[in-house]
Length: 454
Ligand SMILES: *Cc1c(COP(=O)(O)O)cnc(C)c1O
Image (cartoon, rainbow, N blue to C red; front, side, top):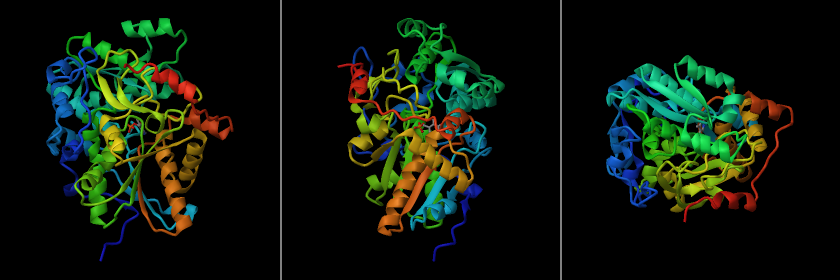
């Protein structure tokens, strides 16, 4: 007999994970290594250490250790907002009139409003443990910058954030949250860095991109004594930290005998999805269970569904190492009407390998369909979702509606990565009927592909 499943499942203290899970240890085909753009040889730890913290470099390169201890100070910080609940979306099920069972893991229950804090606190901890003065980073929509600001405040580290200019202007409140936690926020491209000045000269009036802000943050870190660069997604280490999402979900499912048939997540750089699916994908790789995994991305930034699986630069300014990933080209910038987040040109090498191996599916949606799903979710389940998260909502709703047609009682789990309180300009567009969809043409994509090195 299985226990009655509560509406919200919170793990008990003793059930909270004390280790992260490194999915790479169970992957037969390992993700391709980061390579040096000059030599095209895999990067060594010594080459990475001027950019990233030592311990994080070790995690980045470790593809054999399955379980990695979470240091006690990180566990202590996690207690402020974890465990995150796994919620049975009974109200949404009713509204959809579906026989499917829908659950979502809610990661928005902290001031940064997203899952990004799970990795921010880890990265800040290792920087502090190494005796560094501070860290630099980029932020797009602002969640990562906010999360990192909170983490740096906790460990008393200096935090320099390059914020994509369009977000800096459209999201002044995000900026102020970061400053309240003590971060220094600069709109990107700025005139403070060589790469920023170059991008400004080549593209006057540009509203910036994540790839460009990354270049600036890396330059700022490598040019300053006692600073390192930290990144909120894409990297192996970030997926490792985010495995806390999947481990908690896995424990909750085991406890109540919930067996997911389908797990859905939104994919920007791939960190929440990689974290959510990790233990379940591990079971699939070891032949212990079978689950369908679906990545959902915006049709205006379709890295998986229309991108190429090749080595490309992680950033516009080409100061970063190259990663083999599904990419639209490091010069790709989504059309200016795109308000839904998830605007990075590439994708996590771990998820890219899984997708190439047919272990992960991908889908894309236009943003007005995503906001329609967001609105339905807000009105039924109560939580105002982040536009990014709403891609996963849309993906889960579509699977639930398929179940309605076939009468199948599938179990669908999706990641609700965050809340949308700072995204009201986008919601306003949607509510005013002024939101437009733009799907890049093959010619548009060809321009981005042309920037991929041969
Ligand atoms: C950053 C972010 C994402 C996308 O990033 P991933 O690395 O793909 O997880 C999704 N949702 C929210 C709320 C975010 O802040």
